[in-house]
Amino acid sequence: MKNKLLFTLILAVITAGSAISQTDSTTRIFKSGMGIYAEFGLLPNNKAIRDQLSRLQVKPFTSFMGNIVLARRTESERWFSEGRIILMNSTNYTKDKNERKAYLGGIGIGTDGGPKLVNTSRWNVLIPLGVDLMLYRLSIKSNGSATMAQLVNNPSAFQAVKLFTGNINLHGGLGVDYKMNFLPKFHEKVYLSGKVTYHQPILGKRKWKGENVTVSDLSSLKVNQVYVQLGLIFFPKPGMKKWGGMKMH
Image (cartoon, rainbow, N blue to C red):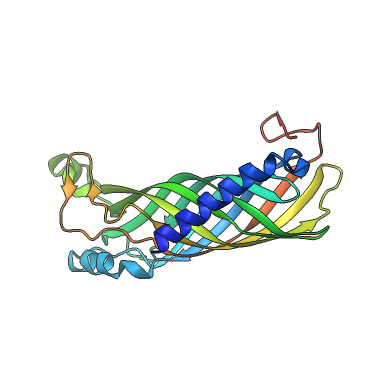
């Protein structure tokens, strides 16, 4: 039901935006900027994986997860969209270097967009709806030291186990931009931007896979959860060369 609801909302926003752009001149006047976000969430649905790792004497990753999101914002008076690059990492507080421990990470690309409910000289209130394509990696390793003889005689004992799984995640929520006049010599506007979104995978249970193997008994990753995102978006002044020499319009 959640999948169908989010998918329907995304289609509605895309369709409405396409229709309005034919008649509303404001949607043909776009500004572009670059942003960086810190995105935080919990993984409360993955107790099964952590319990399985613990039984194998592997210190599991924690339920806290953080993302770094690099975004390109394009917006008009009534609409906005963002292209996203997502770098994900979980935490593991194990201090014992000789203890085997698991780390959860990921990388992905995505997009979101939607209408602006409010657009004033100081505030935007947004409805972000979108989709992310994610690849997750579960790495089990130990940072302990070993002699050269141990490595030569038993190299497999010191190799990290790396497993991968992927998913397509729909998301939707609420966003707010606070517009600041920060370094006005270089920037037309700078936004302090925050979002709260719910992410829902749509591919169901995905098996963990290694280079030559599919793991049959490890629980699938569940990333359906609420994320909180906070960051800055920079809109350079027209004609200025910024962001790797590219002109922003």
